[in-house]
Image (cartoon, rainbow over all chains, first blue to last red):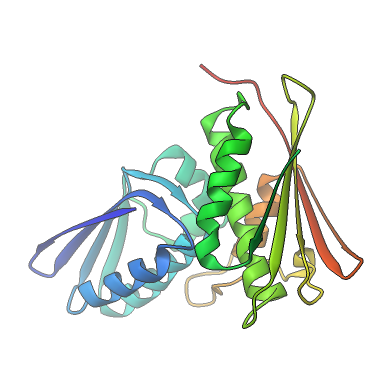
Length: 98
Length: 142
C-alpha cells in the first residue's frame, strides 16, 4: 500500500493506493491519527485502491467516527469492487461517498 | 491439493497470500473472484490469530483444493488450527443497518466471508477447529 497526502489549510486529502490489509492497517491508522490533528475536512481518494479487508474498513469507520466530532469526511473515486464491499457491509450508509 | 502450514501470526499473512496466489495461478477465474477469495482467506486467517490463539500462537494449516480437473468449477479452502474451540459462524452478525454512533467495529470479517463464499462450514474435530469455505468459480471474463 502507498499513502499520499496533500494538505490545503484544514483540508487533508489522503490517497490510498494498492492493497489495505491486516498487515498494513496498524501503520495506516497511526499515520492517519497523526495527520488529522486540527483537520476539519478529510478526503479519501480511493481511485488507486485495489483491495480492502475488514481491517481497512475498521480504520475507515474509526476515522469517520473521529471526523464527525471535528469536521467532516468524504470518500471519493470508489471503484465498483470496493463499492460492493461498502454495500454488503452497510458502509454505504455510514460513509459520505462523493 | 496444495497445503501450507504456518504459525498463525499477522506477519505470516504475507506467506498465506503468496501460497494462495500460487494455488490460484492456474485458475482462469476473474480477477475479482480471486480478490474475493483472497479477502476471505485473510479474514479467516486473522480470526485464527485473534480468537483461536492470542496471546499465544500456534500452527494453522491451510489447504486449497480445486474441484473439476483442468477447468475447475469450484474452490474448496480448508483451515485447521489447534487453538481453543472457536466457531466463527456463531459470531454475532454486525448490524449493517446501524447508524454511525451505534455501529460496532467487530464481526465484519466473518460477515464478509459468509456473504462472499457459496458455502462455509465449521467443525471441531480431533482437538482442531476446521473451517471450510467454498466458492463456485465463474468463467473468465474478457
